[in-house]
Length: 148
Image 1 (cartoon, helix red, strand yellow):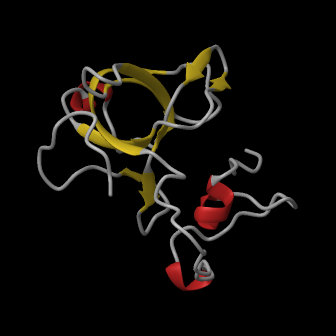
Image 2 (cartoon, one colour):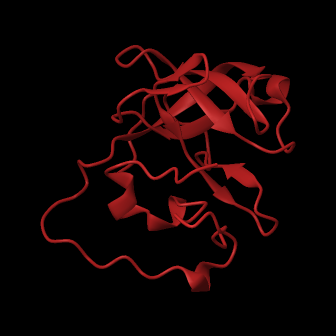
């Protein structure tokens, strides 16, 4: 997998880079190895629009090189349904994701992933083994609720 940094996330979240330009893996599991991002000037809260949504469908993507799923996520009546292709390890079973709330960046350009169009960036973090753990609200929130 090549560098998966997307502008503007590369400035806000430099640890999203999974492989360096030389092809070597970064340690995603050791927070001490990641530099603290310097403070920015001005109000940056509007750069990323992070919303909560409920997964209404989850299907495996069989043609993906790594274990991936295509999620259909309901972000409420004002935003509607959006799709996302997520690279997840074997932690998640598609049927168990349905009904679960997740967090996603909804104001990024769509990205073509194989034959699928990924409209939002579903957020996750690595566990101690480097496997993706999806980010979700601590309790039930309205679909489309904005992170502030």
